[in-house]
Length: 78
Image (tube, rainbow, N blue to C red; front, side, top):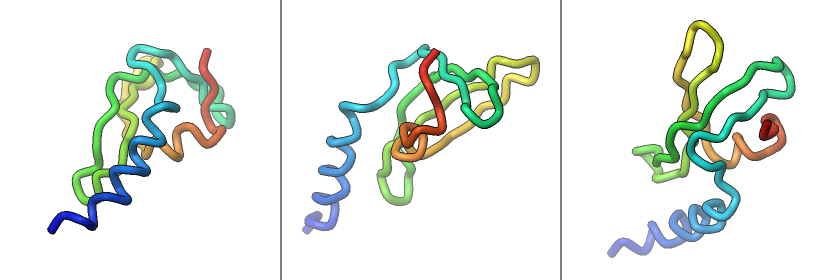
């Protein structure tokens, strides 16, 4: 009945081993800005793992990005 979830869960489990730690600080290679990871969550529509992070500048904006995109080389741990 929920067989369609099996591949999604398998992909998520593979990414879990590579997820950034909560409270870790990362730098965006292109912009040079620093961000702190505050949570790992799920995208509601497809259960894709996402990273929730905040900028460490004066604006303190909150961002959400799919985990696979966050760990694809755009960010580097400080």
